[in-house]
Amino acid sequence: MGSVSLLHAQQLEYKAEAGLSLLRSSQRNLPFWMQANTNGAIGSESNFLIHGGLEGQYVLRNGWRLSGKASLFYRDEVPTELQRDEFFGQLDTPWLSLVVGAKRNRDRFEGLSTVQDNFLIAGNARAIPGVLVEAPQALKIFKGVALDYGLGHYWLNDDRFVEDARLHYKRLAAIINISPRSTLRAGIQHYAQWGGNSPERGEQPTGFSDFIDVFFARRGGDAAADTDQANALGNHIGIYELEVNHRTAYGNFRFYHHHPFEDGSGTRLKNLPDGIWGFYFDPNTTEYTSFFKGMVLEYFQTTDQSGEFGDSGRDNYFRSGVYRSGWTYDGNILGLPFISMDATGLEIGNNRVRGVHLGLSAGRNAWLVKTKLTAWENFGSFRMDNRIDPPQQILNTFISFQYDFGTYGMVELQTAADWGDGFRDTYGVNLGYRISIQ
Image (spheres, rainbow, N blue to C red):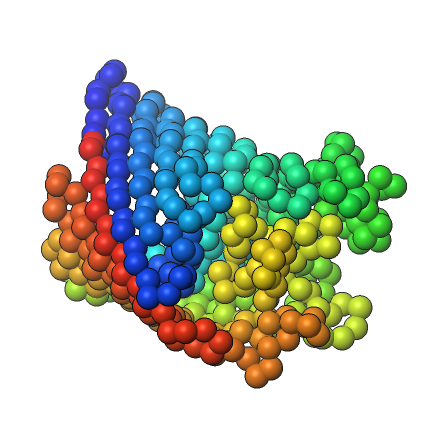
């Protein structure tokens, strides 16, 4: 970022960015990896994307920092062509970070994974506006033990079945040193959709006592829907996360599992082995000049869902009876992008999938190459009218070439192709340019 010194221990840094992408496909829809996990920037039928933004930070004394960002994108073949991307202000201290507005989750896998953050937040939709309080980094509480936490409240202000629904979020994780070079992270992340106005069930409870019920996943009161009185108030969804990180002289190795749950059977692990099982290698580019930049290998599955039969079966991931739009924002799936909407676009359709994924990146000097290869099966869902038997077999491929001209910007060429059952072979190309001023 560019910088302007204001006081002896204070500094203002800023960056402006703009870009243009031109997209073409052999079919009406773009190939999967050309539009999935683009944070809602590119629609499945878009032909172009124009984006721009301004961000800055003000560094204070004693490790405090103020920052913010405002960005927009404009593209065609989507319901709303001009939309905000990110729009937030942030305060960071050594022990707390406060975010107000809409901010993307950090991409922890450098664009190589099936998700940007985890099973529930893939980067497949725009950032949701809200307020988040979290740890800026893991906070040491004992020797060899650190704690990560987060608590948020968001507003689902898109066009959805239950208008003005709210979204509660919390996470808690322990990071334990299991050897001088290795750490274990074990935690839980929990979301709950609640409140709002349903066209079928009317206004949903939003009082403080209702928030407490949502926070602890307790049954709703008399004003709640019948299903929320029998189960928990709101639509609850979460993951257990387990990660082992091992540092070597050659780079960092990460082994991880994100286990989804939407009810008691999921929290009791009856839906194993559903979720994402992955490996990520991040080479040490500080001490070694390496052509190889990173690798992700993943297995993902959502076919078990605690079984097809019994009271605890058919977890029906990302779907909800009361909150019919499900785990979406702006009509885009928030989590694992292979789960999809039904033909009406109003609720979750296919949510039983299984596959393997490989992501690689390499580069030298101003060049960077990324490639993704995903082979997966679509089983539809457990609903009799939506089963796919035998399953639909699909192969998604993607490769991008980037060249950085420094102050003159960066050019990127993407190519992608999809092959599979039930649709025509699809080939696409994306030529993009972006420049930043700082």
